Image (cartoon, rainbow, N blue to C red):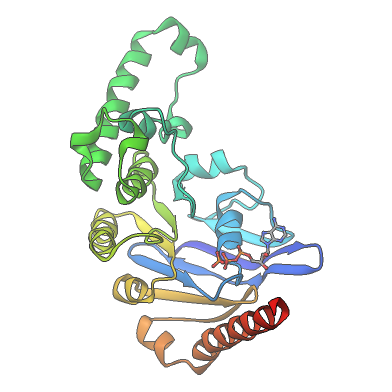
Length: 267
Ligand code: ATP
């Protein structure tokens, strides 16, 4: 069975179809990727899957349930977690506190119990801190738990975001360009972390421009171009597919022509 699937998933903006009738199929377990040239619709697809933007058309089924109409926090409670392309941390809060914010959709006690500090709240708080510490250990930040988030290096801030996404033990983790801005050593450590997450039983879906990273890690790759799915297959199949090569070369050529036109315009 598929853990996540979409049919006819479409998102229109004025005069533009950012995601165009996409049928996505992500099996349970392992690491999967969505790739495509700039503007292909990858981030919009993630925003549709996680409930940040509503679809114009189409359905999304997660773990057998139609979730297309559910708000983001309900999807999170069902076991979906994500990181963003741009780091979104609470910079002056501690590393541990940042991870604890990832548990919000899962906490069961209401605000009254929190205010009264009832026993059940205290027990839940203890468990929450234990889960947060385990998530920090998983990403290699156990020693940093009391540091303010903005004291961490760029690579460590990205790992902290992953810890925050992992703390609620999601079934599906969506990573939006996790390797962006990382140096080769950080990227290698990230690849190792993503593998360990998948081995731990969380299915991973990533959007990433670093092709080496994608090809090395992914079991399946879905390729988008101009909002449409143009291919899906294994890394070997994707590498050998002329339509994929053409989409990338076409995008590169278009960028080159644009740069030339701008240079001429500037003269
Ligand atoms: P990149 O690799 O550059 O991050 P992407 O594949 O993630 O690109 P999207 O960011 O999903 O692509 O954008 C797809 C298309 O939809 C682009 O043409 C973009 O300009 C457009 N788009 C995205 N969000 C909006 C919005 N809120 N309003 C209007 N157009 C949008």
